[in-house]
Length: 351
Ligand SMILES: *Cc1c(COP(=O)(O)O)cnc(C)c1O
Image (cartoon, rainbow, N blue to C red; front, side, top):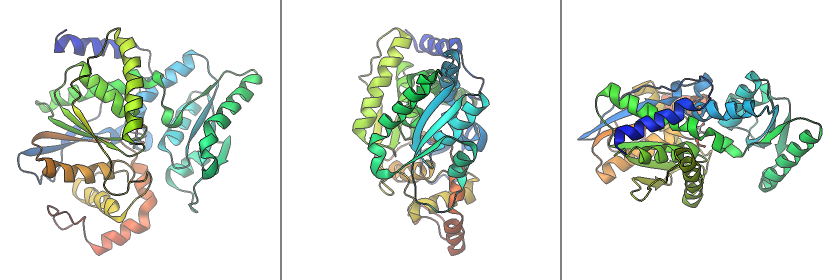
């Protein structure tokens, strides 16, 4: 099959799947700051998709919610951190569709109720707080709740952390479709693409889709939520799901991507000062609200990797959304702003 035929096949898979009409196009535009010779930096504005910068997540939701509706599911059991974007955003979507969420949350010890966590607590009534030490058992606890609900005569579903479910795959593949649209609009292709990963669902779907259409870009995936092994396992699982959609084998030998661990703020949810500085600098220079758990770390690492590996050509940073989380750091950010100093990378200008 030619590249063109493969693109058409992907488009057909996407358009023939019943899905909610959520936005699936986000802009890509050049960044103001262009510090690297021979490299043009662009950002893809997934942060502009959905309420409160729901971002790329809205892509998987478009087919995930449709699947639940089609199967007449009326209650959904979700698990995740108290600050999880997925819990807050998917609860909104469930409410809209009159599906009742039951949320099992990994307890945090933050005092102030704000941001994403506030949204989750405001809009949910069935909240079960789980101590960190018990989190290993959460899937069993949540599945027991699902059975309990079903025994009362309701159709219930349990969703894995981050909403990792094969029903979201076609939705997540719209990111590939949209990248091609961006390349069309810009009039040239991207050679390097940087994206972040939590459960790895969106990143894996993206890699599989690009591989299928023989896209030549090299992807650089920053693993923020899990390790390499976990990512590979999820990739293998989604590859099987994708192959059954394609009714064809995916030749995934020429794996044009690299996985990275963050060099700072390694544990998920940690926000070292240098990452908040990155977020503040990008806010001031680009007018972009980065997520301190995801895109701020992505921008920070990409700015290191590009000169280290001497990457050239059109380079795209995917801003996956989640901007609401930055506002949890008001005090720290205002302090940094008053110190008037950006991250002290050698290329960085003064703020
Ligand atoms: C959930 C989320 C991610 C990670 O998505 P996965 O598909 O779980 O890897 C990245 N960025 C933001 C802002 C998110 O909310």
